[in-house]
Image: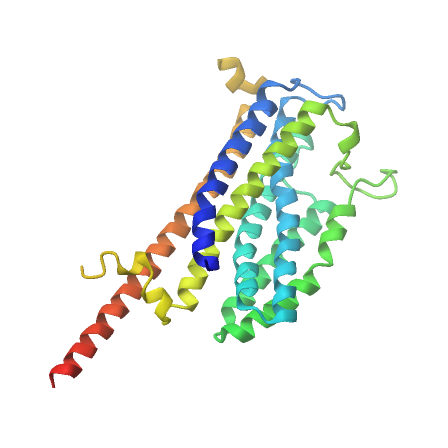
Length: 241
Length: 60
């Protein structure tokens, strides 16, 4: 069985898992958690379930994209370049959701939509790196060259991920201005943590589903002149119309 | 129930975040399905063209 048909068989399962996990995660998040948390945050902290899930996926998918790009560079396998390219769009989308949900959260808790805080700024750079990757890929006609060039860009851009991760609150607010709170998984209320992790799992399954759908599209596009594509059931069906 | 949707006065913020996420996460698969349809249509069209060309060649 080739990758194309295997992906086609897996996509529905990823969709089911995405809906189930996200629904369970949000259910726990909205019904099994307190209305306010220790550090003075009121109900608006519930934005966390979408915000953290999207932010984690944005960073994680960047790593996944670099992984496939790197495999492509080393082994010169076309499918891994296609996976890298497919991952970049979903990664961009997650980055956008993270930034918008962060802005809305910022408005409620900090009173501002945006601040040039280290975490926010580095996250914006992540968005630009994703966009740069996509732009470079579509700017070069020859897919072999565009795959390689954008793979290198992705690899260089990887430097931003640990920077985002460690760009947290500085210990002394007089020394540096930073609004974004520290990631404090250990101090968090167990049900909030569970809701966050399960929602993230749901977003992960969503990413699998959309990335595989996009990879199938890319395969069809790149291989459109081959015999195996011409003989695919979806191409033969209704072909006479 | 209305208490739940009210979210202690933060309804606008919380539900707009949920709405934004839902919007993007429905838009992406929707566009992917549209894209797939247009690619398949193009492949079918090209296939038909080629078959016609092969037939015409056979006649002359």
